[in-house]
Image (cartoon, rainbow over all chains, first blue to last red; front, side, top):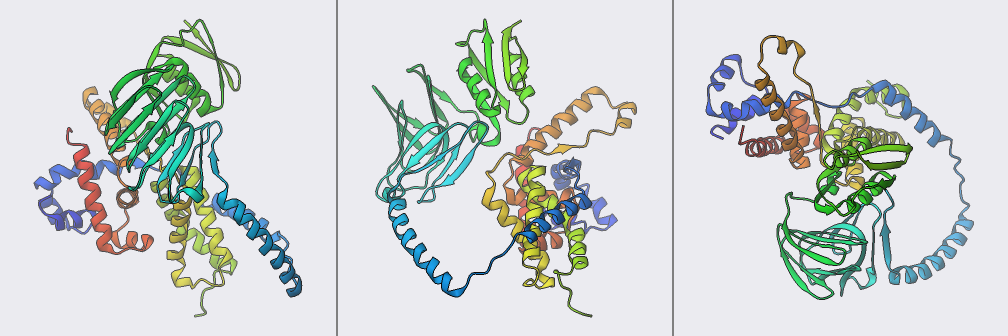
Length: 302
Length: 169
């Protein structure tokens, strides 16, 4: 950027015709002209004001009709007293109870832990931890797949069926499913303890285990796990795992006929459209699919 | 002139027609999800209506945008934003644009689309409000409740980042 002031004026539509002509001959225009002009071609969905207003009025009317009952002052105190007792005993139980967050098929969730670390949960997954103990021990249980953004601090441990992952502060993804286990490190470094071995994963590396056997270290291609932006990605993953992920993301059942479920699939599918997602998987493997019912799919050899 | 009061149906409707589209676009550039954007718009206006007696009309716009932004921050898990773009005017084809040019163009737009998706939310909303909606820095600053200088800074940041992403073109 040579002349920021001029660029800024240009973007804010403040240049006179003559100034604009002169500007178009500069290096800055050569560098940024295309971006700025072509970006204006993008569209956004149409918005209908009237339709929006009609809907809004409906909602407002519904809210208005809700009856409001006023409490008498004396009964207010009675209720308050009862509440205090409930809250006090509830609080005790609540503080010591483990907290569980889970997602079903097609769902995703995100949550913040007491130390501001973040967890993003993929479909059909669960994490559990004890808020009361969090300050002294950052540890949680995971079933399924989650992406973690951990604040720097003392050891942070994720326990899974296949092994435990411990870090000090980084970003990483863990996928722990039946017959499949993968840890991907997106920042910093991660230690993975499996039954018989220990691994240190550095930024950009992933460790994969298929049916209890470690496949080895691989490179990660993207800056974030695909599923966090609605895309499931696979790099040499058994077809069986790919199909169960399809089932989870679209709440469908997939049945296969004469299909080798152990063959490895490399590719991705988007969570936005199930037909396209099925094609993204079936076409490269030369498979066909058909819907038997709305949510039951059969996959077969051509 | 009497003070305008948002509890008045006509005033409220006028307020809605004046700002709903801008708010919708703003929320769309943030979230990349049309349906979600329109939900945020609805909720934000309901909040305004619920508090109509308490809000000074002159500050209502800023209140509206701030409310929508807060609603957004509360729920959204950040997803990748993908915009669609207008295809080349079909007439352009017949003027002898060769297929290679059209292909390159398409490639470029795809690349630009990805790059815009990769901007930070703060950069993207400012950049798109300026580029697609043709908003001036002053108008954007008012919507976001930040200074014009900050808007300008985000624009420059966005531009630089897009440029590095599109280096190969």
